[in-house]
Image (cartoon, rainbow, N blue to C red; front, side, top):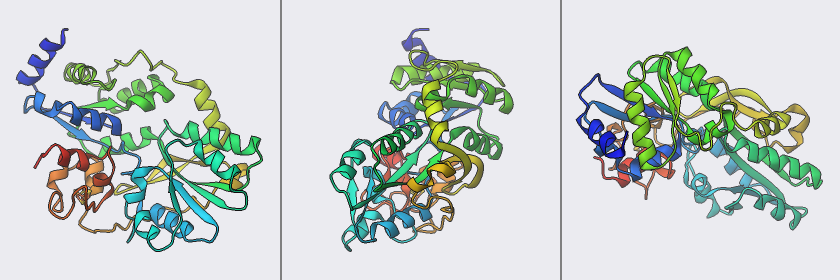
Length: 345
Ligand code: SF4
């Protein structure tokens, strides 16, 4: 169907109420940037799920990074968003002013050159992310071993999507369809989401990231029933996924229980370095506690799609991108951030 017809259909849709969850932070951003919520009928509601890696990271993980950043001869290395997320009390940015050593990098492999040119100094890499980024961390461990680099460790908070999606779906009977995570699907393959659709009896569509692709996928989700699914991102998503990346990950990592902000521990929803590679781990094992900086922050409910960001009592008043109280307002993939930037009050 032509895109104009799809737009017309979605704006005029008057069928059963649809509640569609996207579970990819990049989809959250693309939906917002393309103004898609305004292109839909009131009977199609889009909600964001646990797809932003920074947003789902628990406070004790940030606290541990802060603790490590204060050690002598040690630098915590991370990407931009993580620096501004508060743990129980402070963020990495806050403690930098108190003498902590924190460095932002733009490419994960920068850590290799940093380590090589600073022998005797320790680097802790904040390794967060989903199936998409875990292969990169596996390749980094591979490089560390090949180059006999001993002064880098990873503090991991790596997650896998299927178990979290299952948990969200079981807890929210309003969801009528899922936009499967596009980048994650490239690694895991489409078959995984076919199986999930059947298990949950909720349709899944693997979608690309352009406005047109997203509208077409939403259109498909209004048509599919029960355990049906569709791959609408066939240019990069195969049925089996990226086998080489999957093998690289399983060489170095094993599944573990994952701690999700506001959602608690979800069994087998995390990845951690295997015992034989523990020399490269900075103490990731027990980072599960999640007492938030601001106890009124409702990130957990936002991540689980139970409320919209503007239902949080702090939204837009106490919590803004300039003064974020929770991770969902910090991250450029966070739904609170995108709600705010689009002036959805
Ligand atoms: S608006 Fe701020 S305080 Fe409220 S849920 Fe979002 S990030 Fe947390």
